[in-house]
Amino acid sequence: MIATNQHIDENLIPILEKVSDPEIPVLSIMDMGVVRSAILVNGIVEVSITPTYSGCPAMDVIGDDIAKALKENGYESKVKLILVPAWTTDWITERGREALRKYGIAPPLNPDADKDALLGDKRIVKCTNCNSTNTKLVSQFGSTACKALFKCEDCLEPFDYFKCLK
Amino acid sequence: MKKTNLYNYILELADNCLIAGQRLGELCGHGPSLETDIACTNISLDLFGQTRSYFQYAADIKGEDATEDSIAFLRFEREYKNVLLVEQPNRDFAYTLARQYLFDVYHLLLLEKLQFSQDLTLSAIAKKSIKEVSYHVRFTGDWIKRLGDGTEESHAKMQEAIDGLWTYTNELFEVTEEAKTLAEEGIAVDVSTLKKTYYEKVTALLTEATLTIPESKYFQKGGKAGIHTEHMGYLLADMQYMQRAYPNMKW
Image (tube, rainbow over all chains, first blue to last red; front, side):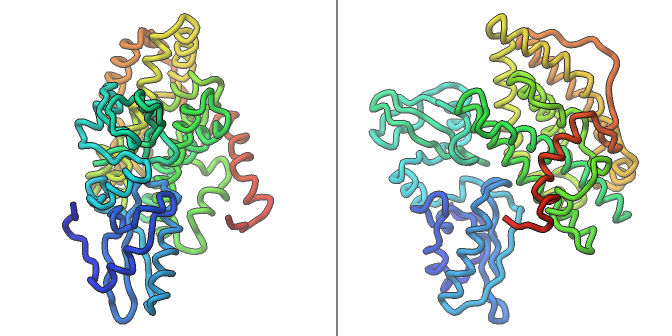
């Protein structure tokens, strides 16, 4: 879902799509929804990005990577971090969700299902390896702030689940 | 609105996150299990992220040479405004979780009000933080229940933790002069209004966890005025070591 008030110049999109999340290299920052605006103003591209989580250590790297990618394409840029509106997992695109799944991270469920999975012990998160929903929460926190750790009880694969944030 | 009032108020908000985060961060690699270790450090990371947002704003207001790092690392003990609760050491896992839970409940109530602040930056930080802190309180609340309503030993340890930390809870609701003035302008939260809901929520959860609510009427305070417990100096010595030993070093 593309959020409202996202302004990105069309000719910048292909450049920004090549920048990926350093912690999830298969995922473009565009599909992640962290780029909120990118506009050419007086020869300088002004980019606004928003963090997934306040403490996300990837944000500094993402800012540098954006500046580098734009520079390679002949653009000077200014990258700034904004907090409003706060990022939500709704901004991850359909293509982004597919990329996550293929990479072994189950994409976020809707808020109610997410709550059932993380707190209600319901078995609804699909295993990224065998698609079974016979999966179990191992840890509410995973390798990064945005993920929880699950285990498939059918194929025994441990996998990350991207927590719903709304 | 006076600039120094706002600056001091931001420190009051941020120092709680910084010091609570520092205590949880101490568990990195030392948690009782891998999952809880990761959980505590993830919560710590969220709190540090929030701290950075506050300190970047505070540095803008202060001007001069202030940066988020100088505010975090180069103040003296008496200049930190965190409550005594968050600086209490990690005695055991029950104590760590109880301390964090007693802070989380307050933190969420505070942010739910702060999101309506007339100050747009504070409102933005609050809106972002609410999403994170609601997850923290779920995690710590679950552990209070699990240990309180667990084995005889886990129950005893959790009860001891709650008994030991209870005396620090009341300070959360002390209103400083800065906050009072700013609350009248719609910028700060009058934390005294959160007290009733706080104790109702905590009492309900502790009761569910089969724990006894301490009856002590004596409460410690001082942190908001910069008068800390004996643990704070050690915490700062550890936290500030690199910047003191190698001034201006960068990551």
